[in-house]
Amino acid sequence: MNDKALRSSFIALHSTLGFVIIFESARTLIHAFGALVEHHHMALLGSVELVTALLFLWPRTTRIGGSALVAIFLLALLVHALRGEFPVALLVYAAAALFITVHGSAWRRRDVAAAA
Figure 1 (cartoon, helix red, strand yellow):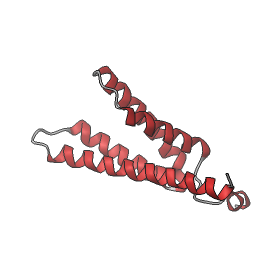
Figure 2 (spheres, helix red, strand yellow; figure 1 turned 180 degrees about the vertical axis):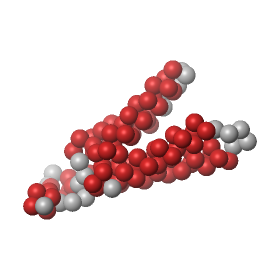
Figure 3 (cartoon, helix red, strand yellow; figure 1 turned 60 degrees about the vertical axis):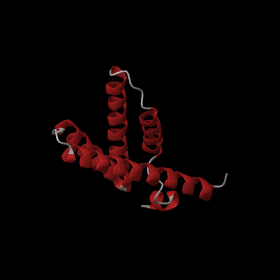
Figure 4 (cartoon, helix red, strand yellow; figure 1 turned 90 degrees about the horizontal axis):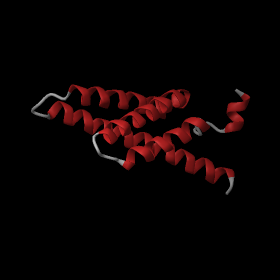
């Protein structure tokens, strides 16, 4: 695989994951505020996820946002597991966020980043 294809697929994974998390966080917030019973814990979770997803997408804060997302997903997986549920999507999200966090942002070209 050439460097251009690898970089393009990495950016696609990074941006897709970030926007999916933003979308799901917004849905969580809408549900939390639109429910008949107040769900403060869901509103807090949706807000934190939304902020960390934005940090994850911003190249300079990718590692901060990614680390927070991995922690959030693993914590959510644990909470669900204790309730007898196993949402495998959270495991996939955590693995993808960890991969991107470890390797850093691909938005800037490596030769440009090295010169800066």
